[in-house]
Length: 535
Image (spheres, rainbow, N blue to C red):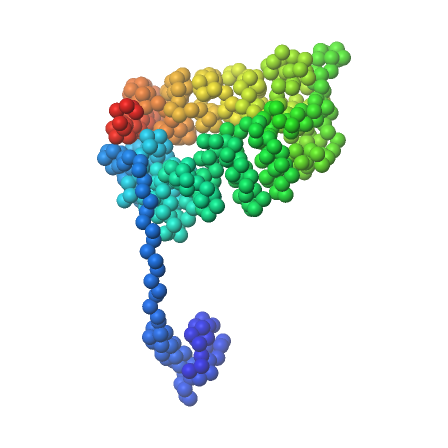
């Protein structure tokens, strides 16, 4: 028989009416289809008889040791329950009635367990890796809890290869083992996977920033562009003026993304040469005009071109669709300039006075939006506070790229941030507060927690329905201080009014109370296994 197996399969797929049976298959007088099936049967037996045994693979190396303490028994059972609930029917946790959604509590539980320094049980590593495969937001904490054994196991299953990629997830697992901080560090840097190399660099950077920078510089010229970008991002931690020469060299990198990241890092160093260059350019564009009858005002003259020096310093020449070139260049210059220059340039005593000055010719939205981004990038609380304004009436310049105070809130201290959002909720209610709540520290501090509970109670009294506030209710389950459970229990008694609306609210509050008390129980379960001196 001269026909190959592939010839037979092709003929079967096309049909004997469209393709002739291969030569040597059909006997005289035999039907084409029957001849094809006979030939396939013979060739199948031949293929089976000719199979060779698979070459035995070498056994994998034993899993590395993980010296961290095991989970307490109750916490172990809780993790097993959380992982089992994730993979239950629908894969979305139990949402019915007043039952807490265990799926949404898993990220918080993982973070708390890592905070206590525990390791994941070996028997639960497959379920933990599978959960992190399905949800990328779980990966850093899940792999940190899994530690070096999670990485070892991930190498044996292609479905878990995400743990070996060059992101924070794989680095978290390796860092948990402590190997990156020891003698193994240099070897891993030279031979390890990219995620392991990132972990080595991050660990060394935390321990000795200069040594970390020198390690990166030793192989910088040989790294791929995408790898250089990730490595450069590690320098954000403990960034200092001693990093400036290295970052200045990166401004000439052949990758535009690397150049932009280096420029961004340099602008967070107010004393850097790049910050000084940007300050000089920004000063040339923004000035104070005292000659007008209406009083002093800011005048703006946007740059006429984007020269090579500006591009080297991180200014992107081509604006996004719908944006004018000159306003685009101006915004980037002001955003990158140190905020400290403006009080002297505008002749004012502080950020609040500068923000209050009128801006001529419609440039206020662009100027204030650039100041907002600069305040967030530089972590300047004074300018953030001035640009936010009072919580009762926060500004939102028409036409600017800044329409949400959440970014500015991130530059304020946690306590002040919570107080501002609490006042905002008291005045505006919960409808506009979802993004603001997302930037507040967890658990929500007082008076923020009380403001959220009061606003929910007011919404019920006003005849609203809980599903109108489902996003805030979901946040409250994860972020509200568990101590608020007792106060919420008073609200489960439906007030007079529409019976159906009251029933819905009662169920929603019972669910919230149940979740808060479950979170408190989880915290106690994790604390049970700690040594007495660390509690």
